[in-house]
Image (cartoon, rainbow, N blue to C red; front, side, top):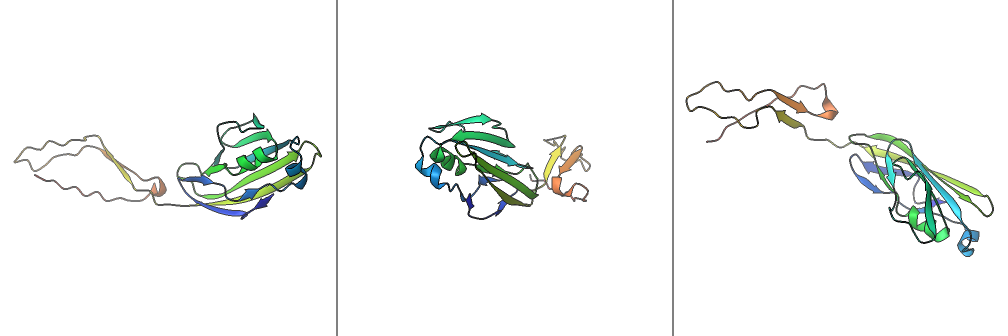
Length: 169
């Protein structure tokens, strides 16, 4: 394998293709009957590849969000390597690892590579949920209740939030 970079950065809550993974197999490139098995596994995030079968290839197992096995010729595997996308779990950031290996069925040769993924945190806006969505106020009333409100902010669960309300006529 040749990879553009062993260290890749993504933003939390986004998905993107894994960049620059290229299979280099001189024998495989020349022998169209040669098949190999590609194994891709991730620790924390989710990986997906094209949902359609490529010419000369088939999914053997997995095809889950954590791993898949794909069997095909050199060209099919090269195509699928360019279509693997990565997504971190929702609201998760940190370090992750993607393991990629290929086993050549002809010579039983094995090649491995590891991608180190760093998922960068992004600030999520807080969400305000109130039991009363509409507040009807009498003209001369001084005290009106908005009802019970909850502020959801997954990144700052224990922090104190200030709520300001205003009214327009």
